Length: 259
Ligand code: NAP
Image (cartoon, rainbow, N blue to C red; front, side, top):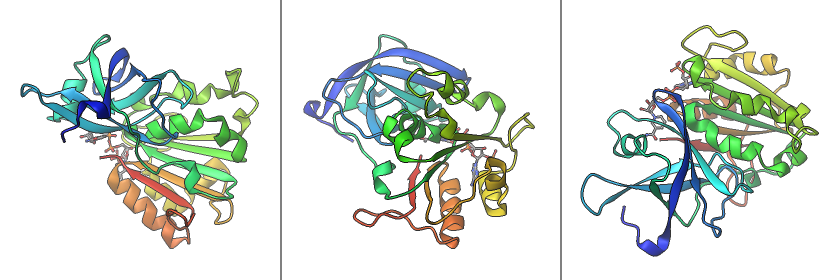
């Protein structure tokens, strides 16, 4: 994709945090004019191997709309032109950020829900971190339900932040609203479920574990991550009567494939 210079700003990587060998988060500076709705994604550009060429990729924004920086959560895709370059970037390096933000995995797709369910696999967690740092989310819902599925326990990134809302000066009055289920599929992990989220959804075990039922009147559900997980979960939920939210026709479901 070619993007002319007036369509992006040149930002700087300010912080890189590795979680595992192939999983990392990074922060960049943020242009003062950059706007996004929590749940949206940015398009980031890094220089490619060929001279004067830039590779662009979509990245969900993990940071809050009120943060001065932007934060992203990434895996290194084996052989991937973008992430293999990105994973070598370090603090102080430039990164391009398109001025426009994108995507519809936002709570304004819904009307009148009471429980907001956020089901993530892998780095699909990112948009939900941004949504969870939006005060309006906590104010508008009685319950926030976050499900994070990873292959192995060290990939449970951001767990401390997710568990720490009750210690935060700003969020502690709301923190009792959060229910958090961790799923680690490829090794037994204390306190975590081990079956795939789709199986747990279909069997009702997920609801039982969280102590809350999915309900057409109350539940609004967001899915983000592995495209097969998104598709299979969507089918399970549609079979139970939930509907996809569309522009001008709010339903129960909003989905984002992650790659
Ligand atoms: P992943 O394979 O998406 O697994 C993450 C979690 O999702 C695991 O708990 C996994 O369970 C579960 N899962 C996978 N497929 C599912 C399905 N159909 N239904 C329900 N749950 C499902 O792994 P990842 O570690 O996040 O990413 C793995 C690879 O995906 C990366 O190495 C990369 O190649 C690719 N990826 C690409 C991009 C991109 O932008 N190109 C972004 C992210 C990831 P299981 O252990 O049972 O599989």
